[in-house]
Image (cartoon, rainbow, N blue to C red):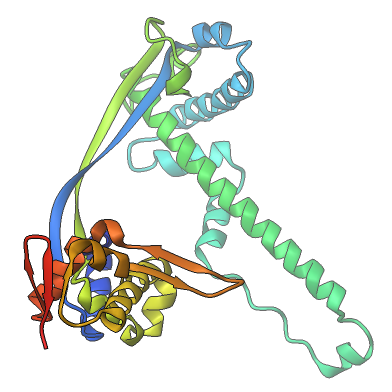
Length: 310
């Protein structure tokens, strides 16, 4: 069988449907995969990390930003924020007009104002102004996106600070956020595992994927595959096409009768084109291709001997 690729469930169903519609013999097998990620962080009192990381590139700026988050946290908690209201109070302290920016981010971009013919004749509207307007809109969208990203990062930081310092909504804040324990991201590959301020962890996520294979001979039907598949899954289509060209080449070049596996392997190489040359070497998998042809009743294998039928 020829491996088309590995896909998650929805995509696997789509790929299989396209190939089956084209008449290819398709096989789907599910398997469990593990995605492993190694993470590291610096964890300690704010004052400790400021001292330790003062000479590390980018860290002073990162700590300064986290200090702004802490100030916003303290202000929100002093205003009596609870679990249900903390997000809005905190983000409005941190990001001016947070609620308005959130609404703009959620809403589609406003359509351009109506342009009348008189404006065009008067020269009030030009290609340059359209271009400038487009660039301005893009900058606004970029700024909104950056704001949304910062809001997610800052909320994650605040949640960790609450956990690390055992803060409880409704309890007096006092000076608990003046020098709290915080966590900062670190480069796992460049961390000293013996450093008491370095915390490392490994996250493993188990999931299910599906392997799609096709019969080698049925790959010769590649020209029947829908054009949408050819565009959306171009790499997979090119792989199927390569297998199909080899299969068709073997069928067209083979002399009926007997041959040994070495002769068959020579037929499994495909060459085409001049200035744009395509070269496919299938000799290493000649036996698998022959077995596929045997299943289709086209030949019979016995040891290293192949006998074509018909």
